Length: 369
Image (cartoon, rainbow, N blue to C red; front, side, top):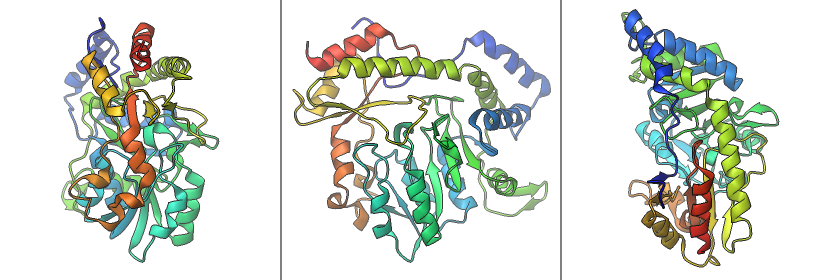
């Protein structure tokens, strides 16, 4: 390879010259954080772009998850997926909540609604699904179960910026949706996150919780946290919004090229989403089956040896980590689909400036030419 190191995702950054006026404005108004003008502007701009009513910006997606659970006063047990990044379930532990894992669907790798009801107990208070790789969950089936059992639904939508289904933004489903704006995401603010909420009252509570629980200068009403996004990150977000459509269009082209070149390779399966109508092409996962010419881990190492750095994303399962594997719901026999997916998945590089020649070189290595 002559392209240098190729990673799964790389930050999409506009030219530095475009950022200078924002920096000068921050320096001029001398507001660096505490919900300054760029913070407020970005919240308004994101509501408009994403088609949501209210949004609250955070310093990162993990703190946003922790706060979302606190905002809805979730306790006891929450049903979630083992196939995600550990922040999903860690946010539960931070709130003293027990995660209950259920298996996933083989086609989307999202939580399987058919497995949820059997996991509900008298201690269950909420469901926390993940829009894995940005592919929408079966939100209607999940909401029907939640309504039947009077449960809250918090979506970990870390990968789902700009994703829509037939009803509009996927972020409008559930009681809350949580986004990540980490540097590797389709839309990033270096580090950042947000909670999408349905009404002004909920947003007000979330805004208080992310600022230590302050209501005014002298009154604290809850044990909140310092979760506010700073002005530099908010300014970058405003600039990124100008380029995000172009970035997603470029990702779509790369996604299509991968699918065309990988078609027909024995043992390589590209994921599709049965519920998706408008994607953000955040990731490009493949499943490496037993009929592929080499094992998944051997392919992973082969690519790394050529300075291509894919991710076994998500491996291991959350339920296999020490703080979770002793839970009854974490037993592998209860999670056969998730277990198989974790052993087979490999996310290939995809980002807006990934060159066609590099994609072809990656696929050539996969083919074994």
